[in-house]
Length: 218
Image 1 (cartoon, rainbow, N blue to C red):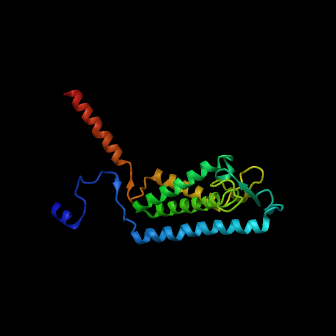
Image 2 (cartoon, rainbow, N blue to C red):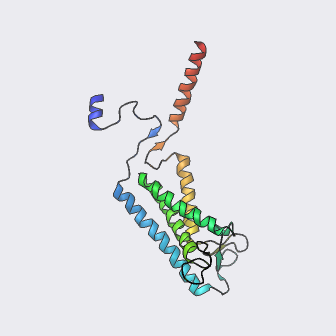
Image 3 (cartoon, helix red, strand yellow):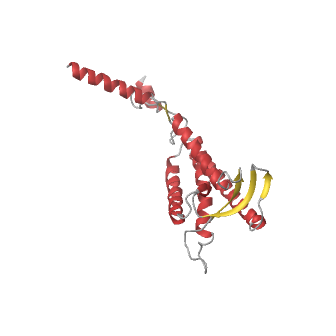
Protein backbone atom coordinates (compact mmCIF):
# COMPACT_ATOMS: atom_id res chain seq x y z
CA UNK A 1 0.00 0.00 0.00
CA UNK A 2 2.80 2.43 0.87
CA UNK A 3 4.41 1.65 -2.46
CA UNK A 4 1.20 2.44 -4.31
CA UNK A 5 0.84 5.70 -2.37
CA UNK A 6 4.37 6.74 -3.16
CA UNK A 7 3.98 5.84 -6.82
CA UNK A 8 0.72 7.76 -7.05
CA UNK A 9 2.19 10.85 -5.43
CA UNK A 10 -0.04 10.65 -2.34
CA UNK A 11 1.59 11.59 0.96
CA UNK A 12 2.70 8.67 3.10
CA UNK A 13 1.42 8.36 6.64
CA UNK A 14 3.47 10.58 8.88
CA UNK A 15 4.76 12.75 6.03
CA UNK A 16 2.20 15.48 6.64
CA UNK A 17 1.35 17.07 9.93
CA UNK A 18 -1.93 15.85 11.35
CA UNK A 19 -4.52 18.62 11.39
CA UNK A 20 -3.37 20.31 8.19
CA UNK A 21 -6.10 19.31 5.77
CA UNK A 22 -4.93 19.47 2.15
CA UNK A 23 -7.20 21.19 -0.36
CA UNK A 24 -7.22 21.26 -4.12
CA UNK A 25 -4.61 23.90 -4.99
CA UNK A 26 -5.73 26.91 -6.99
CA UNK A 27 -4.25 26.59 -10.50
CA UNK A 28 -1.83 29.32 -11.47
CA UNK A 29 -4.03 30.54 -14.32
CA UNK A 30 -7.07 30.76 -12.07
CA UNK A 31 -5.09 32.59 -9.40
CA UNK A 32 -3.88 35.13 -11.93
CA UNK A 33 -7.39 35.43 -13.37
CA UNK A 34 -8.87 36.25 -9.95
CA UNK A 35 -6.24 38.91 -9.24
CA UNK A 36 -6.40 40.29 -12.78
CA UNK A 37 -10.18 40.62 -12.54
CA UNK A 38 -10.92 41.91 -9.04
CA UNK A 39 -7.96 44.28 -8.65
CA UNK A 40 -8.69 46.32 -11.82
CA UNK A 41 -12.43 46.40 -11.01
CA UNK A 42 -11.82 47.80 -7.52
CA UNK A 43 -9.22 50.24 -8.80
CA UNK A 44 -11.37 51.41 -11.72
CA UNK A 45 -14.47 51.87 -9.54
CA UNK A 46 -12.46 53.87 -7.03
CA UNK A 47 -10.88 56.10 -9.67
CA UNK A 48 -14.12 56.57 -11.63
CA UNK A 49 -16.20 57.50 -8.58
CA UNK A 50 -13.60 59.94 -7.33
CA UNK A 51 -13.36 61.59 -10.74
CA UNK A 52 -17.16 61.83 -10.96
CA UNK A 53 -17.70 63.40 -7.55
CA UNK A 54 -14.87 65.87 -8.10
CA UNK A 55 -16.53 67.06 -11.30
CA UNK A 56 -20.02 67.25 -9.87
CA UNK A 57 -19.77 67.90 -6.11
CA UNK A 58 -16.45 69.63 -5.34
CA UNK A 59 -17.14 73.00 -3.73
CA UNK A 60 -20.88 72.34 -3.51
CA UNK A 61 -23.35 71.34 -0.83
CA UNK A 62 -23.54 67.63 0.04
CA UNK A 63 -25.82 65.48 -2.07
CA UNK A 64 -28.27 63.90 0.33
CA UNK A 65 -29.29 60.40 -0.77
CA UNK A 66 -31.09 59.22 2.37
CA UNK A 67 -31.63 61.89 5.06
CA UNK A 68 -29.59 61.29 8.21
CA UNK A 69 -28.23 58.06 6.74
CA UNK A 70 -26.29 58.59 3.50
CA UNK A 71 -24.93 61.55 1.63
CA UNK A 72 -22.08 62.35 -0.76
CA UNK A 73 -19.68 65.09 0.34
CA UNK A 74 -16.21 65.68 -1.09
CA UNK A 75 -13.34 66.05 1.36
CA UNK A 76 -9.59 65.74 0.87
CA UNK A 77 -8.10 63.41 3.44
CA UNK A 78 -4.43 63.64 4.41
CA UNK A 79 -4.73 60.72 6.85
CA UNK A 80 -5.51 57.03 6.66
CA UNK A 81 -8.72 55.23 5.77
CA UNK A 82 -11.91 56.86 7.05
CA UNK A 83 -10.06 60.17 7.62
CA UNK A 84 -8.04 58.80 10.54
CA UNK A 85 -4.53 60.00 11.41
CA UNK A 86 -4.50 63.28 9.49
CA UNK A 87 -1.13 64.99 9.45
CA UNK A 88 0.86 61.78 8.84
CA UNK A 89 0.43 61.68 5.08
CA UNK A 90 3.92 60.63 4.04
CA UNK A 91 3.91 57.85 6.66
CA UNK A 92 0.70 56.42 5.26
CA UNK A 93 2.07 56.71 1.74
CA UNK A 94 5.08 54.58 2.68
CA UNK A 95 2.88 52.11 4.54
CA UNK A 96 0.54 51.78 1.54
CA UNK A 97 3.49 51.18 -0.80
CA UNK A 98 4.88 48.54 1.58
CA UNK A 99 1.47 46.84 1.74
CA UNK A 100 1.27 46.67 -2.06
CA UNK A 101 4.73 45.09 -2.26
CA UNK A 102 3.91 42.63 0.54
CA UNK A 103 0.69 41.52 -1.14
CA UNK A 104 2.43 41.02 -4.47
CA UNK A 105 5.13 38.92 -2.81
CA UNK A 106 2.55 36.88 -0.90
CA UNK A 107 0.54 36.26 -4.08
CA UNK A 108 3.38 34.11 -5.43
CA UNK A 109 2.48 31.41 -2.88
CA UNK A 110 -1.26 31.82 -3.29
CA UNK A 111 -3.21 28.57 -3.74
CA UNK A 112 -6.53 29.45 -2.08
CA UNK A 113 -9.50 31.02 -3.87
CA UNK A 114 -10.88 32.78 -0.75
CA UNK A 115 -7.43 34.22 -0.06
CA UNK A 116 -7.12 35.26 -3.72
CA UNK A 117 -10.33 37.29 -3.37
CA UNK A 118 -9.14 38.72 -0.05
CA UNK A 119 -5.76 39.82 -1.36
CA UNK A 120 -7.36 41.22 -4.51
CA UNK A 121 -9.62 43.48 -2.44
CA UNK A 122 -6.71 44.63 -0.29
CA UNK A 123 -4.47 45.24 -3.30
CA UNK A 124 -7.11 47.08 -5.33
CA UNK A 125 -7.97 49.33 -2.39
CA UNK A 126 -4.35 50.01 -1.51
CA UNK A 127 -3.52 50.92 -5.10
CA UNK A 128 -6.53 53.23 -5.30
CA UNK A 129 -5.54 55.32 -2.30
CA UNK A 130 -1.84 55.10 -3.14
CA UNK A 131 -2.58 56.70 -6.51
CA UNK A 132 -4.08 59.68 -4.69
CA UNK A 133 -1.06 59.89 -2.38
CA UNK A 134 1.30 60.07 -5.33
CA UNK A 135 -0.58 62.20 -7.85
CA UNK A 136 -3.17 64.38 -6.12
CA UNK A 137 -2.52 67.81 -4.61
CA UNK A 138 -0.22 68.77 -2.95
CA UNK A 139 1.77 65.84 -4.32
CA UNK A 140 2.58 65.20 -7.97
CA UNK A 141 5.46 65.81 -10.32
CA UNK A 142 4.54 69.06 -12.03
CA UNK A 143 5.39 72.65 -11.08
CA UNK A 144 3.69 74.01 -8.01
CA UNK A 145 3.44 70.62 -6.32
CA UNK A 146 5.38 71.21 -3.08
CA UNK A 147 4.84 67.95 -1.23
CA UNK A 148 5.84 64.75 -3.04
CA UNK A 149 4.15 61.58 -1.78
CA UNK A 150 1.79 63.64 0.40
CA UNK A 151 -1.26 63.85 -1.83
CA UNK A 152 -4.68 63.97 -0.22
CA UNK A 153 -7.10 61.10 -0.76
CA UNK A 154 -10.56 61.93 -2.09
CA UNK A 155 -13.30 60.73 0.29
CA UNK A 156 -16.96 61.29 -0.46
CA UNK A 157 -19.26 58.63 1.04
CA UNK A 158 -20.70 59.77 4.35
CA UNK A 159 -22.92 57.43 6.34
CA UNK A 160 -24.72 58.73 9.41
CA UNK A 161 -23.51 62.30 8.71
CA UNK A 162 -21.70 63.85 11.63
CA UNK A 163 -21.25 60.52 13.41
CA UNK A 164 -19.07 58.46 11.07
CA UNK A 165 -15.93 59.27 9.03
CA UNK A 166 -16.18 59.94 5.30
CA UNK A 167 -14.81 57.13 3.09
CA UNK A 168 -14.43 55.93 -0.48
CA UNK A 169 -14.53 52.73 -2.55
CA UNK A 170 -10.87 51.91 -1.84
CA UNK A 171 -11.47 52.19 1.91
CA UNK A 172 -14.42 49.80 1.72
CA UNK A 173 -12.38 47.27 -0.29
CA UNK A 174 -9.57 47.41 2.26
CA UNK A 175 -11.96 46.94 5.18
CA UNK A 176 -13.80 44.06 3.47
CA UNK A 177 -10.47 42.42 2.64
CA UNK A 178 -9.29 42.85 6.21
CA UNK A 179 -12.47 41.29 7.61
CA UNK A 180 -12.17 38.35 5.21
CA UNK A 181 -8.52 37.85 6.19
CA UNK A 182 -9.45 37.69 9.88
CA UNK A 183 -12.27 35.24 9.21
CA UNK A 184 -10.11 32.99 7.04
CA UNK A 185 -7.30 32.98 9.59
CA UNK A 186 -9.78 32.26 12.38
CA UNK A 187 -11.23 29.30 10.44
CA UNK A 188 -7.73 27.99 9.75
CA UNK A 189 -7.65 28.53 6.00
CA UNK A 190 -4.08 29.00 4.77
CA UNK A 191 -2.83 30.93 1.74
CA UNK A 192 -1.31 27.74 0.31
CA UNK A 193 -4.73 26.10 0.10
CA UNK A 194 -4.52 23.93 3.21
CA UNK A 195 -6.64 24.21 6.33
CA UNK A 196 -5.32 23.94 9.87
CA UNK A 197 -8.09 22.29 11.88
CA UNK A 198 -6.27 22.68 15.17
CA UNK A 199 -5.79 18.92 15.54
CA UNK A 200 -2.08 19.30 14.88
CA UNK A 201 -1.61 21.55 17.88
CA UNK A 202 -3.71 19.23 20.07
CA UNK A 203 -1.61 16.23 18.97
CA UNK A 204 1.64 18.07 19.68
CA UNK A 205 0.43 19.12 23.12
CA UNK A 206 -0.70 15.56 23.94
CA UNK A 207 2.64 14.07 22.86
CA UNK A 208 4.53 16.70 24.83
CA UNK A 209 2.47 15.94 27.95
CA UNK A 210 3.05 12.21 27.55
CA UNK A 211 6.79 12.67 27.08
CA UNK A 212 6.98 14.89 30.15
CA UNK A 213 5.10 12.34 32.21
CA UNK A 214 7.32 9.49 30.98
CA UNK A 215 10.46 11.47 31.79
CA UNK A 216 9.21 12.28 35.27
CA UNK A 217 8.25 8.64 35.89
CA UNK A 218 11.65 7.52 34.68
